[in-house]
Length: 123
Image (cartoon, rainbow, N blue to C red):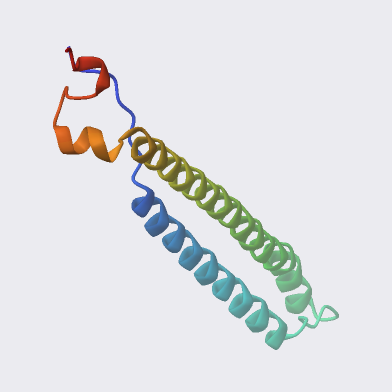
């Protein structure tokens, strides 16, 4: 039966982090452009019946959509932070394991071959 194992693709986590950063940037650009376009329109003329009806239909969504996009950017950035934390943690763990392996392999053991360590020599 195979030994249980656990593997993490730390380079893949780096790729995912980069993609999340790109997504957050793209969403923020969309939000900024939307806000700028809405501000450029200016307020509808609420003193006219058509302007008043328009304002009632547009004002709430014109505020809600940019707010929702801003929240989405916060969520993506939070996920990005967590992925980067995982990548850093797992990379550090890999380095610690490699260091332990390197410390446990003495040059004399490597030169003598497998099973030639001090405990296997009988005289």
